[in-house]
Image (cartoon, rainbow, N blue to C red; front, side, top):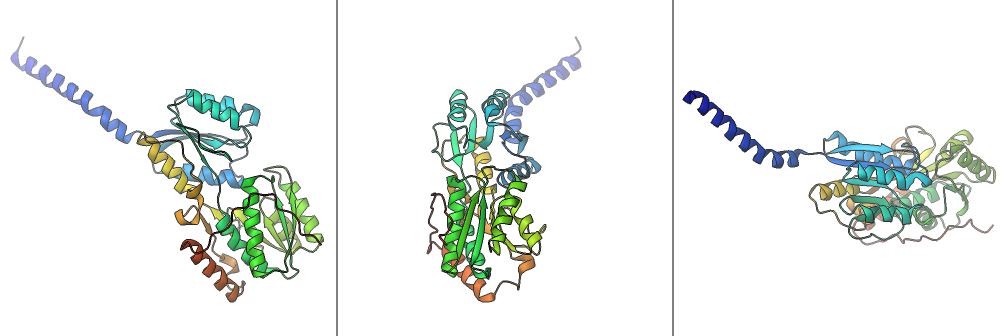
Length: 334
């Protein structure tokens, strides 16, 4: 056999051996984390849209492979979780509020999979982390704006369900409004749905007919009623002012990026563990914020905005803490 052939074959073997040693570390460093999300409502629903947005941003950066299912019923939720876990997704994001027991059982059955789910409960070792939209701080600030903008001293509030995640935001909003305007009263209604704009709209109509001139739009549909009746609205979780430039004065914005980015980083590093991510939704971590006034710049009294800005500074400096009240808010006694 010619020496040149042996030499060539020897070099190829060495190169192949080197590649087999080097490739795993390179591919691991460059590998995209496989992430799946499960939502019980459409992607455009406020709460879900913020999670979906953060995950899509990570996908656009090339950090993850992202799959998601929307409109999954509670009855099907466990099955979909198991399918995604069995398929090798390394991080599963979702909402366990109505399926706590089933979701936690899935996490137990797949201990090597990382789970990050919206929940009112505690983390579950070793791999079940929880989060929630703790955006009561900007909700308080929007309440201050609403209290200062109402002329009838009547504010209408339409929510989905009276659960802690909704109650704490409504209560914070009410406390903020009361700080600025002790005379303000509230009408509170829950439509018992996470996504039923027509029902929310009808509830808002009734409140406006009863004298409310500022509406707290915890659900889609409320701002539509306010727009049609020439009243003001306060947004929640997302900023819809571009759709309602003459109606939505301010919004409490939820930014899920701090939560999602942390979970992705820890899962990639193999350091993900059971913990409560709730704090990463707070203003300190840029997990929430008061939306810019936008089209209402100059329409909100300067004195009122000075008070709001001062309160915001105090919150960020730790000088003022917005009380977390998860109790069901009630309409004011007339």
